[in-house]
Image (cartoon, rainbow over all chains, first blue to last red; front, top):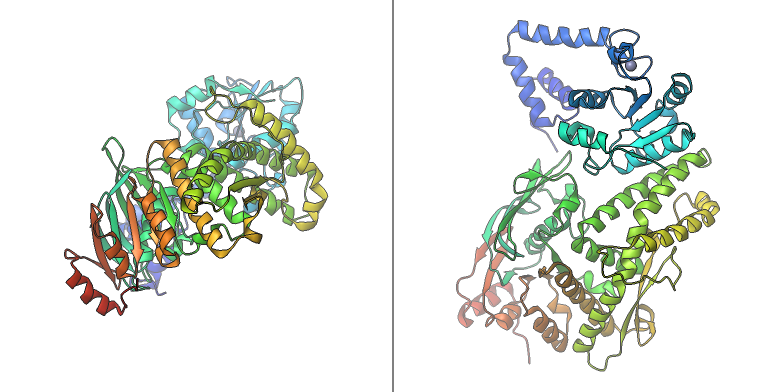
Length: 203
Length: 406
Ligand SMILES: [Zn+2]
C-alpha cells in the first residue's frame, strides 16, 4: 500500500521521526512538521537548542533514577524530605504527578518500567537491586508502592513485596481510586491524594 | 436495548452507510459477497469492542483506507439514547467512545449494547471443540457482567505474560514465575467460580428451549470439566452476595495453586501454562451421552440454537434487557420445524437483524410488525419500500432464485 507523501523526502522523514514519539500519530506528526516548517528560523533554533540542552544536561538521578541536572535530583538533595518513606514508581514522570498533587513528603525510587515478559522486561531490567540496597542503607521504614493497577503493575508490586520481605519494613500499596489499568499520568490530584491517604499494607 | 441508528465509514466493503433501523425486524437481502455479513459484523462490534467473528481490527478497514469507523445510537429500556463509537486506525490502537468519552477499558462497553449472534459457524457450537463452548460461556458472562469481562481480559494478559516467560525456560527465575502464577490465581478464580455458579441456570434454560424445539428429543445437560476445580466443587448459594463469595474464591484459589504446582514440570516441557480457566471444557450431553460424539446432525444443530437462545434469555434475566439478535444466513440450514420454533422464540421482544440471500425469508416474515427490508448490493443499501408479491417476484428473478416448494 503506497502512502501519500508531501513531495519532499526531507519532510516525509521528519514526519516519520515525529510519528515515533509517544502519543503522536501520523496525523499529528504531519501537523507538527508543517507547523515547524511555517515557524520562524529563530523559533525552530530555540526548539532544537532546548532539545540538545536537555540531552546534554539532564540525566537520571544516581540515587533514585528520577530526573536530575547533577549527580542527585532536587528531591534526593532536599534535607527536609522524610527519609523514612520511599515511594516506588514506574517512571520519572510519575514523581512529577505525585509532586504536583503535593501529597507525599518522602522520597522516590524510579523502577524504569514494569515487569512484562511480553515486552522483554525482566527483573534485571528494572532498578530493583538499587532499591534493595537503598532500603538496607537509608533507614527506610515504609515503602509505598505507587504502580498502576494493571496486570503488570500488580505483578511488579508483588515481586517487590516478596523481594523486600522483612518484618521491620512496612510495605503499602496505593489504595483504590487509581483507575484499574490506569496510569498515574491520567490520575487527577484529588484521586492521588485519596489514594495516598488510603494506602494499605500488603501481606 | 434498541439500536436506533447506525453509521459506518470504510468498514470492509461498506464505504459509507447511514441507516435508521426498525426497533423490531430488519432484513438485509442480497447475494453473497455484497456486504450483508459485514454489516452484521459491524453491528456486533461494539458489543464487546471487537469483531464478533474474531477477525483482527486491521482486517475490518476498507482496502487502502487509513481508518474505519462504526457509530451506533442505542436506546436503553428507559428510552435514553447512548452514542457508541469505534474508530479503528490501520496502524495504532482503536479508540472507543461512549457518549464522546474515550473508554479506558473494553469492559466499560458492557451493558450498553448486547447482541446474540447466529451464523453458519455458530450453528456448529454443539459440534465443535469443547474450547469453542468455553468461549461461548465466557462471552455470555462477559455480556452480562463488566466485572467478569474485565477479569477475563486481565487473566488473558497475565497468561500471555506467563507463557512468554515459559518460552525462555530454563532461564526463568522461580520468583518471577511465582509472581505470574499468583496473578493467574487472582484473576482466574473469579472466572472459575462464576462459570460454575451460572452453569445450572444456563443448563435449565437450554434444556427447556431444546425440549420445546424437539419434544421427546431427550434432555440436554451441560458439564464443565475443569483443569482446576474438582467435579464436586460446591458453590453455596448466598442471596446476599452479588458475585462469588470470598469463601468460594479462597477454596478455588487453593485448588488453583495446587494444580499449578502439580503442572510445573509439564509446563516447562510444553512451554505454556497447562492448567487454569483457559483450559476448562464445556461438554453437552444428550440423554446422558456426549452430544458431540453420539448426536445426530439435526440434534447438534438444534442444541446449538437452544444454547444461543438460552444465552439471550440468560442475558435478559441478568440485565433486564433483551439483547438484539443477529442472524446470518441461519434459516437456510434449518428444516421447517426448527425454523418455526426459532422464529417463535425470536418473535418475542428481540430486535432482529437478519442477513439472507433468500426471498422466501422475506415472504415468511412479511406479516410481522415493524419489518424493514434493505437490498444490499456492492456495499450499498437500498430500502425496499415495496415488498408486494409482484415486487418480490421481480427481485427473485434478479437474484436468480426458484420459489420454495411446499
Ligand atoms: Zn533522586
